[in-house]
Length: 432
Image (tube, rainbow, N blue to C red; front, side, top):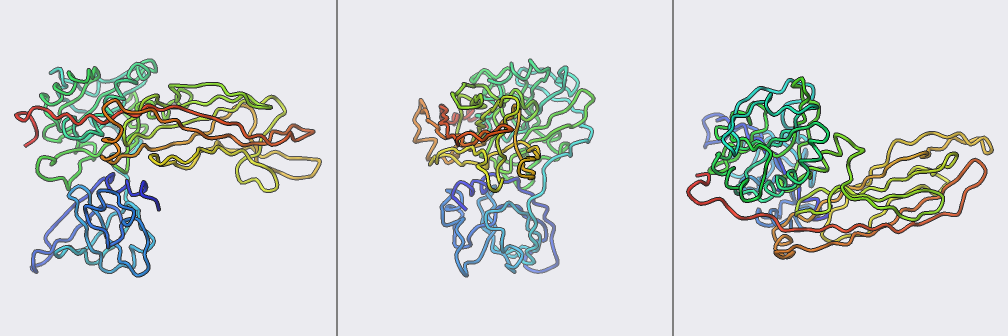
């Protein structure tokens, strides 16, 4: 598993429900969440996403890394952790010193209230001092609520809020209002909103009452971070029901506002699009965002429109050349697996075979993550930099009588990467 996969280290939603267990030596029973790493990796190395932390080594023990407090826990026994290197997990057992005994390992569970539940009502002041409720935030088609860690000390949160502001008009055009919720004070929210011109409501929940109601509090956070939320979105319809939720398993990994819009309305996913010359079909490439920040998830798309009676073969088809969306390797990006639509089964009477194909108009989506490490953010400079992304679409188009020669069409995108906002609020209003 590559170094980018270890971004999960810094992106987990940590659960800690500790209770004293028996009379001995301050032992605690409970559940700890984090990522399984190579036990030879230190907390500093895990935070820096050192390759050794995600590298399997014969005989090397496995450990749990908790980024909220940058702590590495030994696991005893090891058997349930085997096969989970790099996975986000919850480990149950008894903590003695730096070792979790019992070490029952389960994949990390979902965060927050479930889809289909009624969204709890609330009342809170925003950055303008206005009291907001679920009703006052309701759009014609619903509300998107973003829970985030802080608009003061969390640069990934600030980047997400800035991008959500950039997408605000597109949401409102679809009848959806936006709001953000954090444990920040009104003063912190006003300072950030004034500086970055955030116009949608940022709600102050200093006692984490709303955060608890929606079951998104990071219970392990301590000190100035105590009370913060785990980052993610809820989409609430006009009847007050939770219809969708999008919670990142990694705090440095953030959906842009346009990506959330695309999940709710797939046909609106691209902010930028362009046509590409291609034989036997029409091809348009798009991208969710023109501008990204470290940690962003940006979506690239290829929209294919086939003439009537023409098809291409779906990935995995044996004996034929299937369509393939390929993005060239990028050192500072993590490429996710391309997402193809559901194929149609076509019967070929001439050879009496059934094969999976695509017909008509369809879209292939490729998600990529911008490097989230501080070193990369510093290296791009104050003005950022433009990244040229290149790839190709490979396919063989066929009609009912003939298959045309295979084609490979170059595709390209440009993405402007800008640095994160690391400016803090004045000392006197920061979390203590």
